[in-house]
Length: 326
Ligand code: ADP
Ligand code: MG
Image (cartoon, rainbow, N blue to C red; front, top):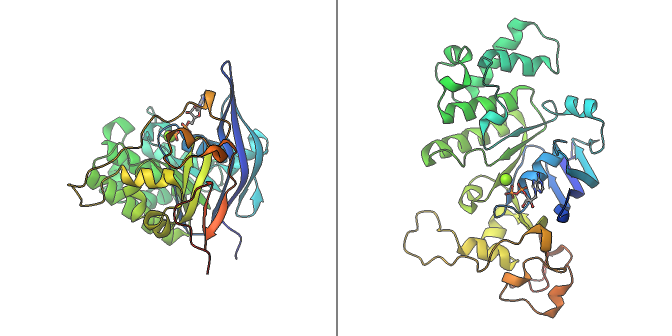
């Protein structure tokens, strides 16, 4: 089966605001093979979350998906009516949010929420649903899972709540899980534990993951491929080691230079000059040009996303040390 778990082509999501039309997601294409983990990286405001919401059909007015195709395990889901999309959510694609309370209902016990999540898609007995809930909690490393089933969300720590949200995302064994900075709010030790466990689970279940983060050090040990987003567009994509070791796009280089390498404390960090642009007044060409040391007049035209090396593409008129593909 070579059908990718997720295949997104030219996705466009716009916000129709008083300030004008904001192109929060501008012709984004992503392919995630079955069982693979992809990182979606970029500074705050680059469009990562809106991309995730778009994939689940969760964009609210004034936003709207205005173009593109979204295939999950070969099935086109973009443009489905609300009812059909509800059946896709959870079963084929699920999302883990930065705030687990986006998933959890504060007034329901964990077991109630989990069995409801199963019964939304399947007719099974309460008993079978409870057994599956228990199993899912154990799989995400929740100690004394049986007692936790009876807890309300407020009785759990932040890390435990996020584990429950992850267990709920896994319940119906979706083809794809979008993880939107789910560990950002947690301390580093718990973050590392959860990353490890989720990677193992994705492997066991054959679930594909899109791991959204602003943190380059998170993707390094976790993902196989990564895409870098800037102002609503993918500016670079490729195998993670290639992108981290030999970035093509000056923005990717800038992101790498602005984070300490793992274990490194002394090196002078150089933040990218300038600010992330507001979508309300983007330059007409490459959106990064005003902050880019390589920019020339040609950058007034939007560059295409071009493959420069095997599997590695960038959207830049002045890619860094491109090597002719062998
Ligand atoms: P990220 O997750 O990368 O930090 P988001 O995807 O949340 O960024 O947002 C990308 C951009 O989309 C924002 O900078 C903003 O311009 C626009 N946007 C997001 N939500 C809304 C909204 N509800 N109304 C108007 N614009 C929005
Ligand atoms: Mg976000």
